[in-house]
Structures are given as structure tokens and as C-alpha cells.
Length: 142
Image (cartoon, rainbow, N blue to C red; front, top):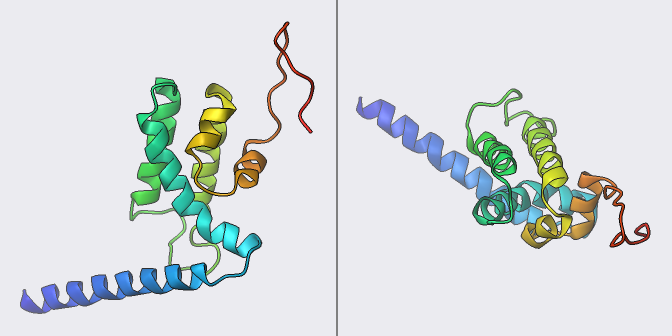
């Protein structure tokens, strides 16, 4: 039993050390697409936490957002995380789908206020703003 606990402790220490190394390396990336991708998952987790507590977010959108957060936190993945490049792909897809779903039910400004990263990434993920009609409708965004 003692050997199992030592092995488990070593495995957890290696995992934490690899995460710390990845965070350190991600902070040293030059501005650009690689840095944006490295920050995407942490920005998504922050957004999930903020939207979960926001009273302006409908319950259906909160359920989708919490599901995405649980998916990110879950150690079980469709694509194992240890595979280079494609490991976090399932996490990114699930979060992107949940944010797009929430984007159709939540005012865009609420999502932008909750997003800690570069706003252009979230706007690109959400796609074009839905067309509004009526006397208060503004012209198309440019």
C-alpha cells in the first residue's frame, strides 16, 4: 500500500510540475495566435465562473456553461490530454459550443464583460451578432 501511495504522490507531483512548466512557457510566448490559444482554456474557466453567478444569464445557458466547466475539470476526456497538440481539442470544442449556445441566449455585452481575455477571440467564436429589428435596432457593426 505504501508503494502505491508513493507512486501516486510522484505522479501528482509530476503532473503539477508539468502544468507549472506549461504556464511558465505560455507566459513567455510572443503575442499572437499561440499565446491566444494558450490562454483560451484559462479564460474559458474564468468566464464560466463569472457567468454562473451572473443573474442576467438564463438558467438554460447556465446549465450549458456549468456543463462545459465540468467537462474541462473532468479527468476523463474523449481525446487524452497527454497527446501533443490534439489533447485539449475536445475541451476546446465543448467550451466553444457551450459559449456559442450561451451567446444566443445572453446579451453579447454580458459575455464580453465576463471574458477576461482578448475580446476579439470571443467575438470570433460567437460569430456575427444576430440581426435585430425594430425601432431600437442599430446599423450593422463594423
